[in-house]
Image (cartoon, rainbow, N blue to C red; front, side, top):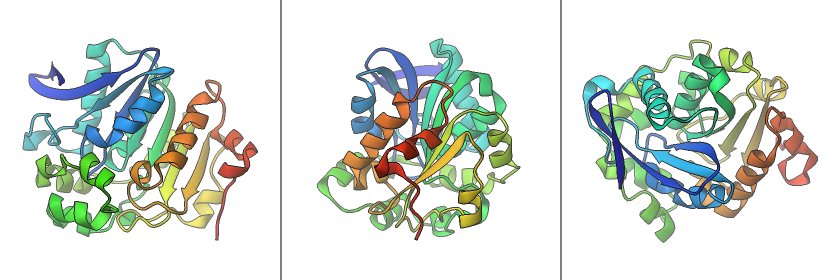
Length: 262
C-alpha cells in the first residue's frame, strides 16, 4: 500500500507501470480497487495511478473535506506532490466530476479525459445514491459476479457522508460548458442500464463540440469496467492511443465505437 500526506492528511494510492501518467478516479461506490484491471491494461504504455478520494478506502475520513471542490483539490495536490505534469484522467461517477472540474480549472495540465457514467446535471443523479448505505448501493448497482464482489470489496469503507456531501455540493455550475471551452479531448462513456445516473438527453449528445464524444455500452450498468470489461478496455486502449489533442470523435472511424442511439 502506498500513501502520502496531503494537507496533513493521509491519501492512499496505488501505482503500476512506466511511461506517461494516467490517473484513475473512483466513483461514489467503491475505491481504487475496481480499477485494478484497467490499470493493468493501461500500464503497458502508461504509469497508472489510482487514488482513494477523501472518505473512501484507506484515505482519511474527515467530513470537512467531502465537497466536490475539496475532492478536486485532492487531485491537484496529489499531482503537485508526485511531480506529475500533463496527465490523462479517467474518472467514474464522482471521479468523473473531479476530472472535469480539474480540467476546467487547469486545462493546460490535462491531456485527455474519459468520464464514465458521470452526471452532467444534478437531476441526472438518482436520489437513492445519496440515502442508501454503501452495502445497499453495492447490492443495487453491481452485477453480483465474483469479479464484482472482489472489485467492490472496499465499498463498505466509504463514509456515507462523503457520498451525500459530494452530491449535495454538485451544482452544474456550467461545468460542461466550461470544459467544452477548453478544447481538452473528452470522451463520455455511459452504461445504458445504469439505474443511478441518467444518460444526457439526445439533443445534448448530438450537439457535442468537436473535442467531445459519447459512447454508449449497451450491456453495461453502473460499472462498465466490470460489466463489459473486455469491451470497456478496448475502448480505453483506443482512446489512449489517439494522438495528443486529437478529437475522440475520431473513434467513430472504428465501427464498434460509432454513435448508437435507439
